Length: 120
Image (tube, rainbow, N blue to C red; front, side, top):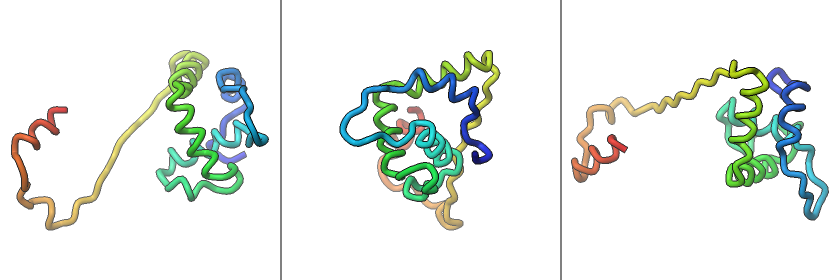
């Protein structure tokens, strides 16, 4: 078990929420795939760089997207938060480096569009 893999307690909360309809080929273990998805989200690495111990990276990205469209991630977050009695903390930040000469560059295009995008 890697440092940030799901604990047995977390898995017991999440497992009943996952889809159980099996189609076609045998499924890669859901817990393994979830750990791969969480590894990717935690590191910010490309999907293709997910370690092999988590199964094929294509399986991880496909399940992530399929479960997102089906609303499973919202249910998982709510269940884990309830299991920890609301004591879940998350931090989300983005940092984008700008070339040293681009920071003071002129903004080409319609200035109203810049304001509209900033307000959105």
